Image (cartoon, rainbow, N blue to C red; front, side, top):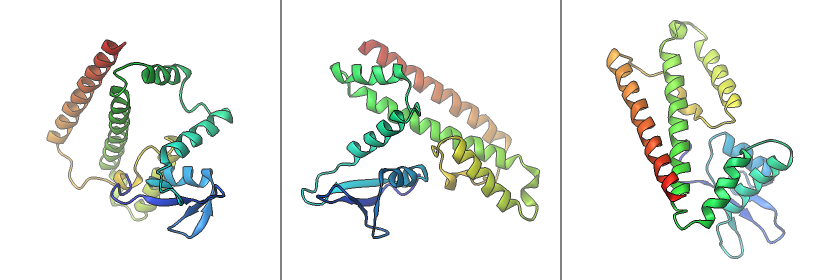
Length: 187
């Protein structure tokens, strides 16, 4: 992921125009969506009131993609999200979603690390260019969910690391099962 400690500041003016403080120009929602797909964190703040509008604009980006026929979230998931806001234990759902996406990003990163480590061409001249193209392809295929910076080949790979990744997968499956159990108890 991009640096979490300092997100890109976008200011919303009274005219509702969005201003990128890093590049000193106005941006659209699609520009912001592109920045996020590239791994940037953004914070959108109302210039006059100082209110954080990030959630509102991120939801608007998703809604616009949905209105264009791009199925961002399945209807069942949307229904579950709406239901979760109506139940007393709704605080578990955001944590579950956050943990799920973190596991997805970690899994993608581990997969790319394994693919790169097993590649005997890694020492060939020009491999870095091919690797960059591969990363761009994977980023396009996953909608930018992965972190291109985290897709570099590891320096060492051993049989012990293979065993650890299996244990990691088991731990992830266990955590997911526990979260699903908690969610089912809330219903």
